[in-house]
Image (cartoon, rainbow, N blue to C red; front, side):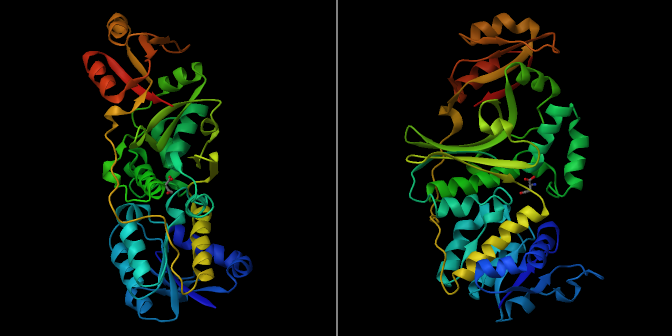
Length: 401
Ligand code: HSE
């Protein structure tokens, strides 16, 4: 029997209890041992809940109990989660977590600490909800030279963009539904401004590079500037609009970015709708491999946390190694990144736009008038910004994949 503790009885923590309650036999079969929750740490009490008697309010009860071998940290946020995790690892308890904020900020040092204490630090649920992408990258395709990762990494924004596109729904009402369904972060800004996708991109980029990619080094834009008109143009271009997190090695540089992109319908990422996430990883031998599944929500995310528990039980007494060193990775400025851009300006600016953006291609949309919209030729981010600053009446722009 392996006894575990769950820190935080919110959406994901209660999901972990549910997975163990409903799939206990399958978990035991996979782990080769029964897994039982001994404690649940939360500030609240849960009268009438099935796990009421396991709830404690003092972390030291858990840390000082030698029977507890694995900690599932599903609280989220940096503190007190960081302190709790460090203290658990220092006591030789393994930790698994869905806490992307903490993994993005301190993951490599927590892996290092786990190693020092012959424990493991796993964080499958921190990227892509229930999708088993990190374990696969660290194991099945670890021998690949991965040169790019492109993903839809935030369920809430993908849900919002899908509803805006398919139903013409307004931003605020769709966000409310996503929050009610338990997809969104407590602070919706983390989703819609791209911060959550940025943390996940940093984690993927770190595993891709084998070094610590700081989320602060990743240029990030959210989806708040995307409008109904943008979707009209996207339709006429046979493209979808998705918030992408990407990292790539190109010309000896390592680029990473989070921003909305126009994606051609024939690219699989364009067909990923609702709360689903998808991550395309390109390896030098393998080519493209696509991971797809529910990127948010109680059961899916909890399933990934339990997968980590199982991995830890299977490797009891051994550190599970990550291809991740605690040394800073060098992320190139986006200035030299090259792509096409879709731009919308007031109709009166057509001539100026044509003069500035040599070889542009005009784009029309049935339901939009009074505008001049166009696609640039391939251009560096730096040159694009410089030219755009000379153009007045710009209504918006979107990068193109
Ligand atoms: N708010 C996150 C999302 C939850 O919408 O993807 C899962 O990390």
